[in-house]
Image 1: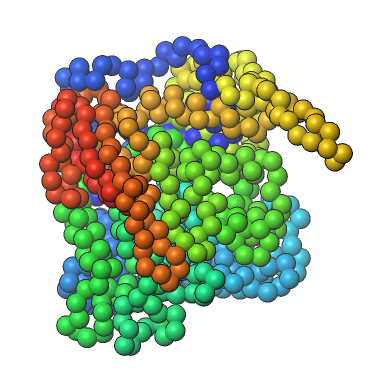
Image 2: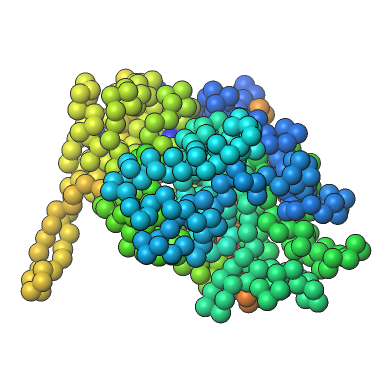
Length: 602
C-alpha cells in the first residue's frame, strides 16, 4: 500500500530568487552527499523520510488502495474492475453530510448560482464578506453547520468533502472533515497541483484522501460525457462515445493518483462507461479495460512504500485560491479569490506564478474548455511537493527537507518560532525578500535586496535560509505618453526560484533525468519505485476523437544518483526488464506513455 509521507516543505515566496548568490556552507549532510554505490548498508526508507507516522494514515477500506467504480453494479467486482459503493455500506459521496463540490456552489455577486454549482450556498450574499479573514470564517461556519452538524458521527472516516475548481481542501480539514477529495477531469486544469493540495491537507489534518475522475467535458458545442452505449445511452443527449477525455488521460490520472498515495480513486459513473451495454454479457469498453488494468496492478503491487515528497509549499491561511477557465471559474475571473469576492493582488499572483510557471508550467492556466492536452505538465521537479497551510504543526514541518513560502504570509509569534526552529534543526526555508521582515528578531542577517536572477544561502543553526526576489536589472515600460521608463524590480519576483529548486533537487532527489517528464517517486526498505509518464503528445477536443502526435515521444535516460547501487530494474507496469548500465537506465516513453520502474537497491 502507499503510505503518505512528504520530506520537504516549499514556501512559495522564497522560491522566487533561486539563483546562485551569496552561498554559505551548510554543515548538515545531504542524503546524496556520498559517492553513488559506495554505501554498503542496505537501503532504508528512513534515509529519505523522517517520522513516517505523520505521513501515514488509516485506509478507507481493508488497509489498501481501492478503485471505486460508481455505483452499485456487482459486475464491476466480478469482472475485476474494482469495488462499488456496497463495499462502503452505501454511497458516501451523496449523503446529506457529504460536502461534494461545495466550493463550486457559492452564489455569485448577482445572486445567481454558479453554473458549476451543485448546492446553492448563500454564505457570501447578499452581504459579502469585507475581508479574506471574514470569508474564511463564513466558510468554516457554513461547513460546520450544514454538513458536520448533519453527520450522525462527526468522527466517521467517511465524513467527506470534495473540491473541484476551488482548491480549498485545507478549509475542509480545518472544519473537521475526515475524508478529503479532489475532482479532476471535467473542465478542471492543473491535476498535479490539485493532488499536491489534497495530499498535503490529508497529512496536515490526519485524514484519508481520494481522487474522483469525472468523465464530463465541455466546449463551444456543448457538454458531453463518455458513454459507449449508443442504443440506450445513460445520459441521453449528453452521452457520446467521443465525449469526456482520452482514455490515455484517464489511465495516466488513475495511475498517478495511486502512485501519489491516494486511498481511493472514484471512477465517476464508471459502471455505465465500463460496458458497451447494460446486458449482463456485455464486453468491457476501453475505459473498462483501463479500470481492470489499474485495479489489477494495485492489487498485485499493493506495497509500494511511501510517496516521496521532500518539499512543502506553505500557503497563507486566507489564500482563497480559485483556478480553472481563467482562474475564477465562471462568473468574474478578475476576482479569483474566495469565489469571485476579491481581486488578486501582487502576492496572489506571486503564489499562482510559483505553481503555474515554475512547478507545473501552464497547467493551472490551461484553457481546457475545448481541449484536454495541457491539464498535466512535464516538469523538472516531478510530483514531489505537498501544500500546507502556514499553521501546520512543527512536527509535520520537520518531516520535510525544504519549505517554500508563498505570498501574503504573516506569522504569529508561535508560527515564527516553529519556522525558526525548523531551520535551526536542519531544514531549508525558502523565502522571498518580502518575507525577510518576518524574521527580523532572529540572530541572523537576511538580505533584503538580491538580484532577481540570483539568491542568497544563509546558514542558521543546522539549516539554511534561501532568499530571493528584490533588486536586479531594471524593467522597461512606457508611460501614458509613450515615454520609456525604468523600474527596478520589487519584491514578489520568482526569477531566482528555479535556481534554488535546481540546487535543492540535486541534493534531495536521488535521480537525474535527461528530459523533462512527469514523475513521482515512492520508497520502501530495499526498493524505490519511479513512475515516469509523458504528458505531451495526446490531445482531445470536446466530443471529438483523440489525436496522437508521435513526435512527442521521449527517449528517457535516468541515473540513480543516491548512495547505494542499483541491483536490478524492471518496468512492472509494462512487464519487461530494464537494462542497466551501472546505476543508469533508459526507457522509451511514447506520447502519453507510462512506466513504473522498480529499482532494487543494495
